[in-house]
Image (tube, rainbow over all chains, first blue to last red; front, side, top):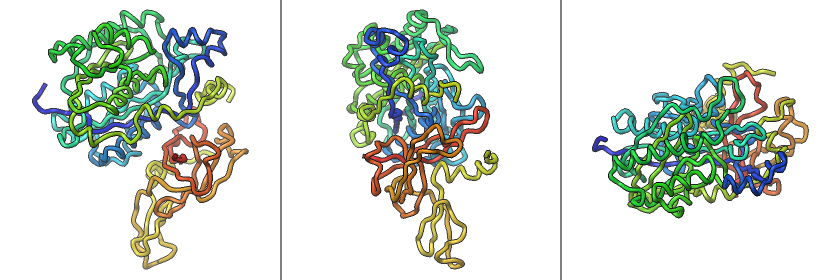
Length: 351
Length: 133
């Protein structure tokens, strides 16, 4: 990588207010809720309201970042929104986000999709723009209102949420330098959704070893080789979290203790926010990280690929923090039962 | 009733960013924006301006029978909101506990879909407000 550095200059997270407990979903389908919840290590998931979608979550996350970190939206030269639940099949989310934020009209914009890793792919593209002096500030968003067919295994975990990460190169602003990034990609169809299909299909246990673990560990090991670091050298780590168990196992394999991933392990409380999952976990870590801390972040997207980042927190973090930490935001919630959940998620077909 | 695409498009700055106007002569802010100041008339000088994103509830009501496109959201609250620059906005109140929706309650801007989605139509995004603690 070039000598020039790029890094995170601000961030914002939006988690919907509503939650449904895994046990409530299990109750409706005659399953043992406690067993399902324990098996997945997921207690509840965030539910987007009927007037929320990936675009509204993306806008609200980005607005928080702009406000909390004093970023002039006119400086934004690129908007990349990663999601597998873009509101339109054709018509970009990115341009709606730009308009809502009040950017100029001179910015690169495109919607990205790579299952759950499109948000981190946006970060890599923004990094490249900044490092090549094409833009001043880039905005990468991971946002999803994840779908799961009723009574499918995915329904217990598919959550909603968004994180907006602002990437820049000004040393006075950078709160976390991105030292290195790499991706590990293969053709491994473990999860997909065909055009016009309402819900995704998946391959059950096949999504584990040959898919999630091969790619997450593949990208992480590639990153460790490039940086000359070991797992134990990191103070914090966040991994993609389709459930609450996979990331713990990935961390163990890399020699990273649970204490270092706990801060960014949010799926047990908000479900799998797909493209938002790794970026939201990273933001939660930035809420508490200290200058000099090293962070390992590895996303995963079915299909399949993983993006890995080695990040160093700078001194600027002492004066540049989010107004409301992610964990505090998650505390504010309103439980809904399965019927209200169906209404909000548009699953009542006669309406 | 379907609103035409150009009509929706013209209102995007107003709906997405609360773009209104203010009079440089008397300093009064207006939302939606005006082209003539009702106070200063021909002496007025109106400029476009994004409105503040916070304010307080001036008056409110609970809607039990919603109009077309909103019937699935009932019951819900709408409120007349006095923004920090005294301009007033009529808006739906979301994600707020009922007992906290009171005259004088502080609110902040949110970005949401408005009305029921037409499966094949364009999605309408706009401002809504929520009570802040």
